[in-house]
Length: 184
Image (cartoon, rainbow, N blue to C red):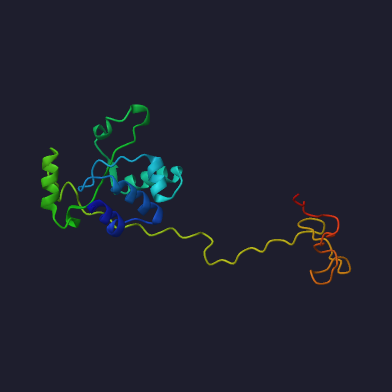
């Protein structure tokens, strides 16, 4: 629950895709943020992005220090041909409201306690990149030459009609030619 809260509210992410990928990892992590290993397909489904986007976002989150490769033995029970990579969410020590509870859980799993040195504060998210053409007027598309594009046939108002005029609209079949079968 704690990793989800951090990922949802306090993680220094750039955009919604990063937040979605981080939340998908946080969903399967322990309260200290370790041993998260959902598959890329699962992350893509949760974050509502393409699996290739997941790969790119995992690389950027790792490069910025929000996640790191974790203990790969945590997923050792999964066959090697389909084993996902294990990640740790690097939630800062100062963020935890009750770090002693988290450290007690870590002791129970045989891990050393979290310290300010092992989990330092994270840098703020870098500014979002703006489009190179932001604020510039759009180029106008050239008009299409005659003979190309969608051709609309001319409307002939004399042929046809609406349902009231009795023109070429729906025709009522002659009631005299079709009769329902009679029972003996």
